Image (cartoon, rainbow, N blue to C red; front, side):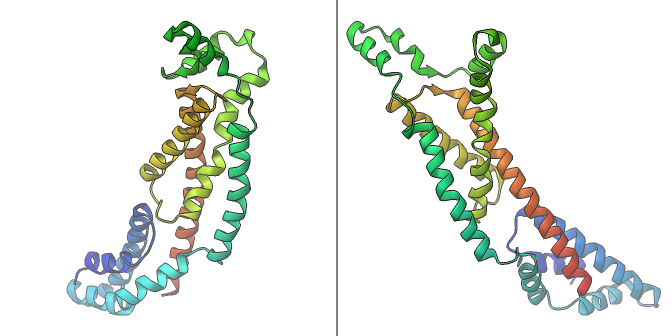
Length: 241
């Protein structure tokens, strides 16, 4: 058995992301290469040194399970409970700010359309051109209060950062950015659609862009913290073997 085959057997037991598996692979490879070199310096052949390094390191399946356990965050069950304790009130606040707490301001556009039959009366309910709203704030900033600009730009990013952090914490299967991004976009699209149907807001593609950006910032923060934790624990575990 080669070192590469042996390491792959260990790594496949770890329930972590592909990136973390790759990092773990190289950590173990460096450790085994050093161990193999020690046996070569003792006069062993390369093949014999490889097998001795593997024997010294231990059984692949057992090590994989031990490393996986060591890499899991402490009191993971309690961390998830805390996550739910934060997620439930956050979800309520989110829906209140974006839906429940809003007055149906845009009902007049529907009324006017029903009276005139002119589709242009509905234009104010949609913005399907990316960055139109953002460019409007940049070019006509003197026509808007600063708090309105900040709320509709920075605020739209910040309010979804907790969602991006909590979703992968609560649902372990969401362990890659592509899947997370799809889920974030679907959730945000649904909120925009509900705003349109309840006349509490417009369907704005810029909102979807900014909200998704905020969620991805939250996801990246969680993924970065998790990656650092796994890296520290994997190195500690390997060093004790």
